Length: 176
Image (cartoon, rainbow, N blue to C red; front, top):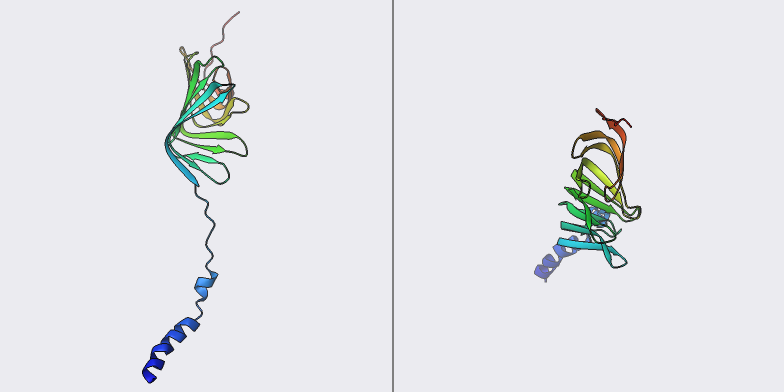
């Protein structure tokens, strides 16, 4: 009987020990992506006409509806006839659902196919509902015959028109 008592005594002591460290440890809520996808081609359309094609190697979607494109994205924009008008490429991107806007970062390049123009910047925002792109960062726009520089830009999503908010450099004016 004594042997049995000696066997249960350590067990009772172990059970009665208060391990306050375990009780105070509260797990943090999970904030990572709820869904992950790879090698996606997504299409946005209006009235059965493709307006935007988005390609990405990796997509993470969060509980808030926000989406992250950690390996970048490539987008093509189309006019109402289905003709490709411009492209956008970024090294990484993020979609903010509540604001319905995208942010591209790292070597962001927009190419206007019709106008043979190219924009380069390090950060660019796109508002699909307004079909508008903008940035406060330094921009370089390459035209067939000149290069424009400045800080800040507001442009249509197809890059058919734009305004550099703080232009820099030498400008050529035509006499009328």
